[in-house]
Each structure stands twice: as structure tokens, then as C-alpha cells.
Image 1 (cartoon, rainbow, N blue to C red):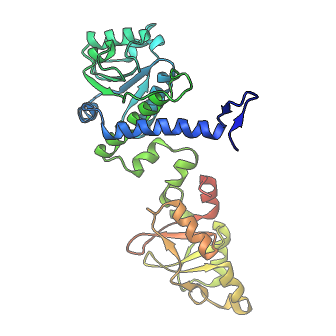
Image 2 (image 1 turned 180 degrees about the vertical axis):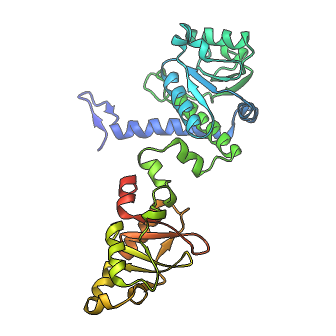
Image 3 (image 1 turned 135 degrees about the vertical axis):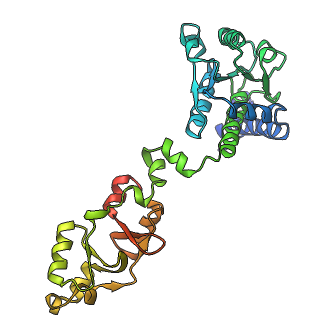
Length: 327
């Protein structure tokens, strides 16, 4: 789309040009934040890691929306956190903020009136107060124990007043805090799954052991088991396969394909004579997505799980993976 003109010949910016300008302004601000990270950043992370309660994050208006997102990100990455609306705080929700907590208050100007009661509460009970503001000499900045100062960059809106650049920088700073604490806590994929059990994100981190069938549910026979008994076992367990096991170790697998290839004298044979040796298997600790990859690659619908020593531990079926929401 090219730049349009009015009837008087004045050029009008296209939406694409406006978008690029906004992104440029915000990107420059983020670059400035990267180059000159607030001096108190390390001290803030250290203090928040020591908090026995929760990190309470608050702000008014657009800053409040950013505060809620920062609290949610912290909570999902190992740092107990909660958003408290400053207006509600003045009407009883100050009781949610205890001496065991720490406060992060967000205000671009540092003079947001609605934060006054929370600031007073933090001073009264010696609750650590962290300010995210563009003006460290403001009321909020002066009252805070730690100051995370935003870069002095222009807002990206046409009138230079709507929170755009400032909220983008605040969000990035909040992410930096959350990730720094996440790494220093040693927060791993397993911990992440504990806080994200639902949805695609949680499903992608599920392990085979979380859905596999085990114990009496497994279709297990020995190499000497007659095929008549083997068919009964396969039918009873309903997976369309059977594991040929010796002293607990998975030695071979019988599938529908093996049955078809031996139809002529199937009932005169034993499980060991029909089974396919050295079958595909997977560790119980493997991700379900990895099990799905093996199934897709080799066009199979069931996969036995064995431990490092080859001991049979379970079976995962394609239907289990679909129910878990991985596919």
C-alpha cells in the first residue's frame, strides 16, 4: 500500500507505515532498557527470592493490566505471586498483603493516587516495596526500597500520552524478573508441567509414565505360550498387541501383522515363534510427544515402555496420547 494524499496534497501515512513507526519507537526503548538495566535489578531479584510469602503486583489502568500479567507469569514459573487491584485494596483487600510478602507497584508517573493506600500499608508494616516507574524522584520512587527505572522514551501513540512504550518496557522488565528468578530457583520442565496441567502446553510436557498402562492391564505372555492362549490374552487386554517377556524383560512383540503373516499354521505355533524380535520401545520418562513421533514414523499404534535394563514397565496406545491432547 502506497502513501495516500488528501485533496490538498498532504500525505497520509498508511497503516503499515504507522505500525512500523510504533514498533520502531518501542524497539528503541527496549534497546535502551537492555543497554541500561536498572541498577537495583540484581538486588530486587535477590530480595524477591528471599520472600516467604507472595509477590504482590499492583498498578492502575493499563499498568494494572501489565501488573496482572507479570503476577501470572511469576506464579506459573515458580514464584508465588498475586495481582491486587489498588482500588479494591483501599476497600479491604489490603488484608491480602502481609508482612511475609513483597510489593511491586507500577506507575509511569509515580504519582498514581490510587496507589497511596498500598504505599502507606507497605511502610506501616515494613513490607519490601519495589517501584517500576519512569520517575525515580516521584512519590512512589522516593517511598520505595528498590527502584526499577524505565527508560525516558516517548510513548508510541500519536499524541504521546497513551501508555504504549512504557507498558511494553514494563512488561519486558517483569518478564526479566520472572525468568531470572525461574532460572535461579532451578525451575525445570517438570515444575512447569505441575502449574500447567491443562491445555496443549501441559500436554506437550506429559511423560509416557503419566498415561501408560501397567501391571495386570498389560498383555504379557512367555515365548512358550501357545498361540491359542496368546490370542485370548490379546483379546482380553484390547490393545491389539502382546509382549513376549522373559524374566520381566521385553524380548519380542506380537502384533496383528504377525498374526496375518502366520495364519496358515497359527494355532500350531507358540508366541515366541510368531513374535517380532527386538521391538520398538520407549522409556517411561520420555515425553508423550516423543512416543507419538515413534508411532508415526513406524506406523504403529501401541508402544511398550521399558526401563534402562529392558524391564517391561508399561504400554502406551495412540488413543492414550490423543486423549491427553498431544496430537
